[in-house]
Amino acid sequence: MGRTLVRVVFVVAIGLPTARAQTVQFVSVVPAEMNESEESAVIQPVTASLHLNEVVEGLEPVTKDLACGCDSYCSCELECPPCWEIRAEALLWTRDPGQNQPLAGGVIPQWNVVDMRFSYRFGARISAAHRINDRDQLELSWFGIDEWSATKQRDQFAQIIGPGYTYFAGGPHDFVYDSALQNAEVNIRRRLNHNWRGVVGLRAMQLSEHFQASSTGGTFAYSLNTNNHLYGVQGGLEGRLWECDWIRWDGFAKVAALWNQADGEAITANFGPGGSANNRDSSTAFVAEGGLNATIPLTDHISLSGGYQILWLNEVVRAPDLLAAPNTGAVTALVQANADILYHGGFLGFTGTY
Image: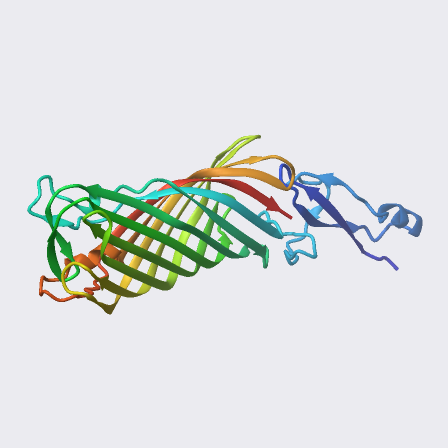
């Protein structure tokens, strides 16, 4: 009685430069006329080493995908991401002071917050991404810079603007502006094709600022403190722009819509009315960021990465914004989350894959 046998051959392919194991399944139909000795010769196990997408002559591919998990090989339409991807980077960023806010009246030239320039400050960024199926990664990331600082000094008699009042004093006048930024994200990164990934997730940010003034040689005048607590959702794209044997260039862009719970506090002494005041405000804030990243493989599992990025944050309150309170002669904390801040700078670090 004739029999038709099906032979299944499993081929493991290793793709370079990053190792990717993939199982490709083929079948071959054995004619019914073959005797047992011929069948035995035909169905011997066959093992071959192939590049991805290589076709084996005489064998027909079986259109069945296997699960692309970390404990198995992959038979996926797209190349699987690594099981784990860990990144650790040093940041060197600066920020602009934001919108203008006068610091004193009746002086020429005008004293303004925009004249207080922040220098570049170091920070850190850490992320870990775990492959959950053949297309998706779950990513956790955090970065923080603490803290930027800018100073300004003027040495002349002036009318100094305080939170809800003004006072006259001689110099020197010292102004100190400090700012810190923290960011945490939980994202799903989905591979759309061989070059692009979509990103959706949750984002939380905290912007904390401090502004302080002193007059007549260091006598404390006022201190302003603000905090912005932002929580929301985001989406974006990551793309492979160009690559060769020793380097790859990627681009990324994300936008986020965040709910901002902002609070502010003003503390005064020695000049004008003493005391303190605090207030709160809420707003819908938006974040947009983008950048370029270059990756240079050092080994099969470790790469050197670096690049430059920008981040724009709007509808927040800065510490010197409390000086915009109307001059009522009393200490006032006017919290209005309507300022924009632009951050930008470089990053450099290592990426490990497994």
